[in-house]
Image (cartoon, rainbow, N blue to C red; front, side, top):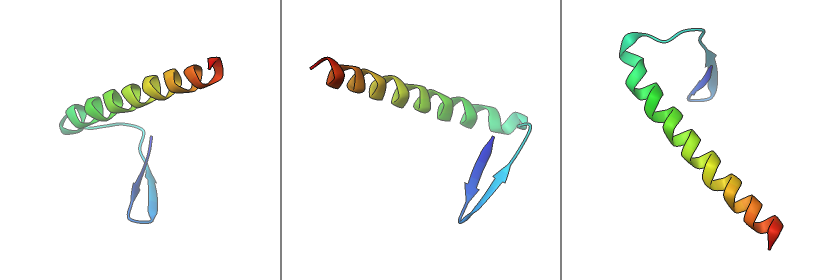
Length: 47
């Protein structure tokens, strides 16, 4: 997974125990955004 700190991207192969809650919340937000935007795109194509 890549992350951006200021203007420099960083990469990691693993997460620590203290990162898991934040990672889960970010993954949930990304999933919600993806689903909402997929539905909008589908609605625009059908309309």
